[in-house]
Amino acid sequence: MVLILSRPQRKAVIIHNPVSGRFPALPLIQHAADLIRAYGWQVEIQLTKKGGDTARLTKLARDNHIDAVFIAGGDGSIGTAASQLIGSDTTLGIMPTGTANVWARELGLYAPMHPWADALTEAVKAQLDGEERPIDVGTCNENAFILWAGFGFDAHVVAGVEPRQPIEKRFGKLSYAAKGLWASTTWEPTPMKIHTQHKTYDHDMLFSLITNIQLYAGGLAKIDPNARVDDGNMTLWAFEGDHFIDAFVLATRMLQQTHFEHAHTHMERGTHFVIEAPRPIPMQFDGEVMGNITHAEIKIQANALKVFKTTNVNPTLFSTERK
Image (cartoon, rainbow, N blue to C red; front, side, top):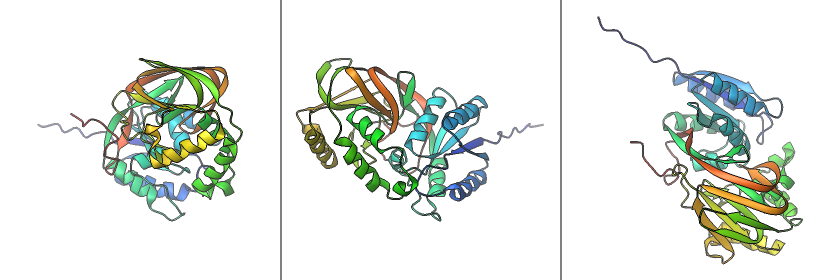
């Protein structure tokens, strides 16, 4: 007699931040959940109600050995969930309902532009038809990020932009850019000492950035075309400057992808960075303000988080093929 063992049904949790994005997305999320069920999964939708719920619900899913957590929200919510899934067997999936959705864009996914769009079901299909792959995660002062960690000017801009009102979110990146431009006029560059594995940079800086992906500034700029999310390294970018005009010139160069050539731009790849400042400077992880610091130590955990590599992902985002 031959004994046939069937594979247990896989389980997924969808965690949704109802205030994320330009319009209520729950009906679209429910349609996307139906598609996941059509793939043979069990699915439960959980809504956040207060700050900390995304982390709490993700941790609960991890502890209950849920196969995948889909975050229906923006980059900040995705980063929060990633912090809870490091080193686990739970795969991080996304349903892009935020404003910028940079991680989604790297994966070739798009947010719904109107309440009857098919973007979320298409995003789910691209992930479930793809494969589950590990990516690197950055950790800093006991917090984690998968996109970037910024110190100085860019974190100051994020702090000046968020939180936005629902009416502002309807204008998407235009609203973000306008508020960001206004916030940038009040930034004062500060001395930073940045230690890498090979060198120390000691200058007045507009800001420094540790990046794991290629896109930046809401996806408007390709800051690091050579970034790979699974190569065990991240890239330090340190931008010298002491005036608002320097920030404007840098932004222009980023949009034109000529920032590499600037004499006051420093770039180095590595696995360990330390940033020191004589006065508190703001920091942001994955587009979320994380407070002020005078000392930050960033370490890279290689292949520490499982994600869905989609069927239409940026072809250069992953460095290796599964063996």
